[in-house]
Length: 177
Ligand SMILES: CC(C)(COP(=O)(O)OP(=O)(O)OC[C@H]1O[C@@H](n2cnc3c(N)ncnc32)[C@H](O)[C@@H]1OP(=O)(O)O)[C@@H](O)C(=O)NCCC(=O)NCCS
Image (cartoon, rainbow, N blue to C red; front, top):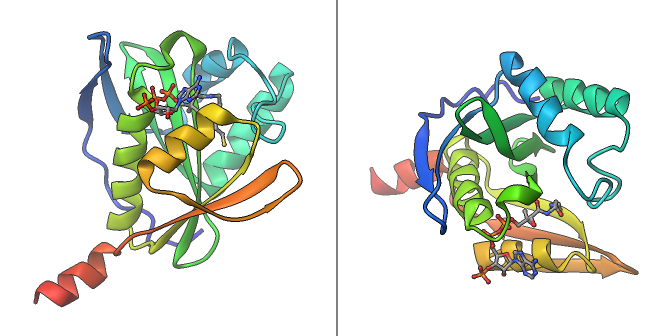
C-alpha cells in the first residue's frame, strides 16, 4: 500500500435521519474485535461479491487482510461499530471503495454521510479516482453510489464497475497557488 495513505482523519460527529448520533473515525487495530462483532450479526452475508463472509473464522481472516492492505473509516455509537467504509489502494491514483452499514442502521442517511467523508479522505490522501465493483442487482448500493456521483463505466452479466473522479488535494493546492 502507498505510504501516502497515512493521511490523518479527525473524528467527525454525524446524525442519522432518525436523530441518532454517531462518531466517524479511522479504524485502528484495536477496533478489530468490535468490527468482528458488527460482521458477526451483519445480514445479509455475502451480499457484496461474497462479502462479508459467512463464517466467523473467515470474517476475522478478511478483516486481518484488510488491515494490511486497506484503510477504513467506521461510524460508531459508543463502543458499537455500526458502519464500515473501506478504501483499498489499487495504484497511486486509484482506490477501491466499499461500504457496509449494519442492517439496524440502514436507510438513515449513514451510508451517505460516511461515504462523503470517505471520498473526501481519499481526495486528501491524493487519490484522483474511486473505483467500485458491485452487482447490478444490489439496488441499495447502486442508489447510494449514484447519489454520491459514481457512474457505471462497464458491466458484464450482473457485475458492474463504477468510478468517481475527484481532484486530489495536492493538485487543488497547486492550482490555488
Ligand atoms: C448499500 C448501503 C451501504 C446503503 O447504506 P444506507 O446507510 O442504507 O444508505 P442511505 O440511507 O445513506 O441511502 C443513500 C441512498 O441509497 C439508496 N438506497 C439505500 N437503501 C436502499 C434500498 N433499500 N433500496 C433502494 N435504494 C436504496 C437510495 O438511493 C438512498 O438515497 P435516498 O435516501 O435519497 O433515496 C447499505 O444498504 C448496506 O450496507 N447494504 C449491504 C452491504 C452492501 O451491499 N454494500 C455495498 C457493497 S458494494
